Image 1 (cartoon, rainbow, N blue to C red):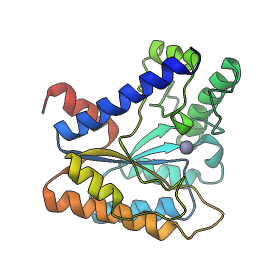
Image 2 (image 1 turned 90 degrees about the vertical axis):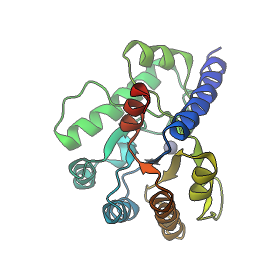
Image 3 (image 1 turned 30 degrees about the vertical axis):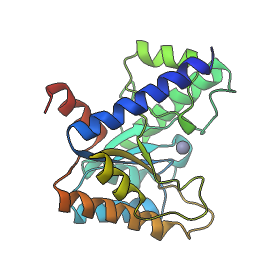
Image 4 (image 1 turned 30 degrees about the horizontal axis):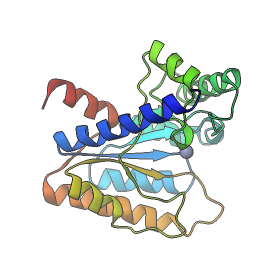
Length: 224
Ligand SMILES: [Zn+2]
């Protein structure tokens, strides 16, 4: 129950998300676990070249010392969401500790931006929620946002740079997942950047719109 219900619900949300993106022919680029000193500024530069907006699921523990990058993300009009504070596995974490982690993640964003938002849209680390968190997020009406197309940059040793572009083009839209934190080894950085560039080029060539998560949800509500 503790993990099973949220697991099934999460799979359901992922299917819905993919359908939603395809319905309005939209590519949503999302980045987890950042900000990173190397990749996040490079991604911001690339997005500016294509005049495109993306969504960043920031990891609270990576924010300290990188407040300027967080501010840049916000001032350039990208969407800032939360990925918790410590990348805990909520399936094996006590409800009290997990709730603290979520709130601490939101607070870290507030500190960096000088905001006092009570919540930010949330993506659970590894996609794993537990029942208590699921109910808590429902009650507080916090959007829980998954993804539909994974670049595989956390579980593959090397990545296919065409993957996101191909998956999104084939499906007619996608919410992609890649990671922009500072890895100990930077060999994947240029590959991740290239995969984002190829996805943006594909969207441009095929007339697919590139939106943030919130923009995708608001398009869908209006049915256009
Ligand atoms: Zn993550």
